[in-house]
Image 1 (cartoon, rainbow, N blue to C red):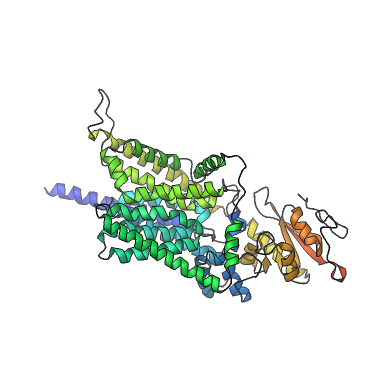
Image 2: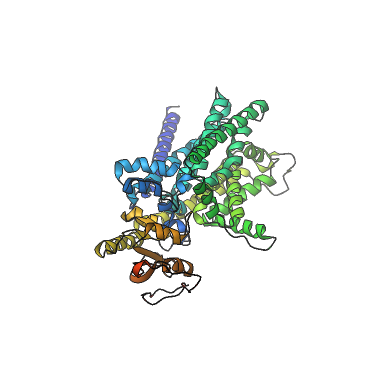
Length: 552
């Protein structure tokens, strides 16, 4: 008896040490995200085409950046996204009071959200309010898939909107799945509604997460339908009220034009073919593979198997799990958004990535508890024995192997930081400061990003509630920066007031369209002359210009 107790005690101690090592490994991969915060988005990654690495950090934080550097968050006629998505710049602005405006501080805020997302993911997977808590190793497996993902490593280190949006969504889901245990479920539903309003005000695509939150609320209360209805109405009403207050506030300040422009600029041209939604949907659905080429098909296999075996015990268990359905709705909602928009970008998938990983581990848990053959509709064929438990362990082994491979790639990115982009921006600012040319203001599509890195004031040449020509007349920049070539339309606007002198170029990214950051001096035309584009072709190099970059 004593020997048996000793063996048991030894097994418990070994298990505790195993969990401790596992948690330490997760913590180590998490901390990699906070290492070399000034480093660029990795060159040579599969996500080379994403615009976020040279625009979004500046765009979505420009209100906080301008307020701290120049005393006013708003720039009339320019791109002011904080009117539509105020939560991130508000938090960034608070942080800058303590750190000053630096790209490291902005990215540290995103990484802090990622750390919190790991904790919230564990809490959500561990205890979903249905039955007994899930095994600890299931929750840790889900967190491991998140922490080791090279895709999430690259995008969670950028000061973009997705990390905070995930944080708020996970917090809302934790409240939603535990509604049956709440003594005041309607009051908790109001809190969920307020969180949902913050999700949408963090990034407007959060609207497509509404079905996921609603599913997570209603499924645990399905046997108490009247209470489920009250909770759903309370959540929806609170969200609408909070959002309505924000719209009324910006309307009172005369900012509805900037709000509408945010949606106008995010509307992309649709193909003329009547079947374009199908093509767009396939493009968006296929974009899930940007997250990963092994775990995404595995998540799809789990969902397909659950649909086929929906009458089996393990299938019923999955579909009754509020997180499983909510995760599926979250992924579907984002794919639907990108299909409607017809413009998927890798960064958009930083939100559904979490829920795809959840689908995998939830499938592992359900398969590990039941057998395919437990249901009477599935008799055991002679000579064949298919165990759901065995399939569950097979999925777990594949997921663990994928985490190992992904962890190695994440480690490679973390240990080989590159600084070509931040060095390009720094050298550009140094050139401007050592070669004065009237107004220090820079005009560039990456201007806000350059301001975040270097504090050079800027305006955006491509986006804004005003066309570029009147903005140039109002702000009179002394400099212009483009990527690799000159856009003829932009050149026409510049030529209205200036001649251009190409003065420097700086290597920046591996993207063939963003390899060189090209700097131009803007020389005002003599005697305040203004050219008329209707009387002269201003889309070509003109006398007085010194342009080497191609115009295309």
